Image 1 (cartoon, rainbow, N blue to C red):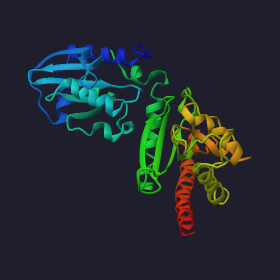
Image 2: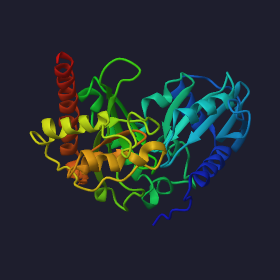
Image 3: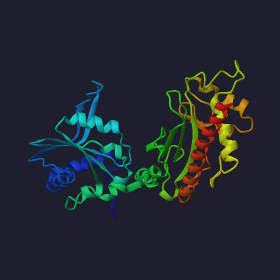
Image 4: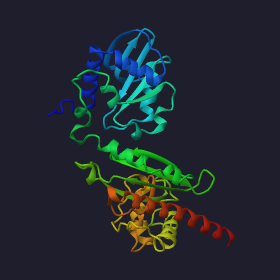
Amino acid sequence: MTQTIYRTEPMATRALGAEIRHDHERFVQLLERVSGKQFGAFEKVECEVPHKDVETERGTVRLDVQLTFDSGLVGIEAKLDHELTTRQVAAQLEALGKTGTLFVLVPRKESLASSVADDDRVSVIDWDEVLACFDAPRLVKDDIEGEGRLLKTTVEARLHALGLHERMPDWGIRVQRGDGGMPSIVFERRLHDGEDAKWIRGQMQVPGRGMPSHLEDTQFEGFVGISVDHMSDADFPNPNLTEEAPSWIWALEVLDEQVLSKNPGRIAVSRGSAGNGRKGLGKHKLPLAKRHLSGRTHLARGYADWSIGPKTEPVGLDDLGALVETMLTWSNGWFAALQAVSLTRADQ
């Protein structure tokens, strides 16, 4: 029975460095085949190599694994179940210099956002390909997949596979991890042209701040809202000083009356109570909702610094498809309703 020994990313990348030092030939062949480049004579491998952060002029950027060839540097940014951002990749490329090449090493290529590897100096490889380069390696697949650590990347692969780019062609779509580190797929669309335009912004995400022990226990919740700014007096007027409702109240009423009450979708609206904003004028969110959405404050969930709207009840992995259909109904229906109501109001 194989035991998991390397329990963190630094442990795994150090073990990889040791395997490369012991026998680098097939690994280098993999890098050259994937990138289409020839790196020349191999000189050395190092782990956690610090480089000055070019952008901030302070602190350091660390390359997980750095290979030195007579032609220049090759860096490897290795991930197990942590998120990789375009900012991280840009910093790694800066550290390698203009002639350097970066390889992003991930458990599953399909879980990686395509924007991360947009640069022609970046190539993507996975742990299966890498481990296959070594005879009887000390670093094994159980070290990479053990202890349920790949649940987030597995879920992100599922979110990419939903095909929202094709099903919502007029919307901006991205898979990311939220403030709590949980996987989510975000969709947004501007209601009209202009800098002051409101957006419909929503997401499907794993709720909470921790993944379950098993993939089949993963839950998802849907959310759709109207954009707000927690520093805006127009979005969050002091309810003690005015009786006027902000525009997001009106937008939520349109959603409830024109979409949720007529065609709510297969997944139920959550009746959970709305919380108050914690930043800036967001402290007025709940008092405004209670005054103007009496009995319907569940519509005013979300985030005072992003968007406000309702959530769905949580669903399991088997109902993810139904959740997608519900989000399509809510978001597209709401967009069309707001467009129609705005035109009617403009004609009055």
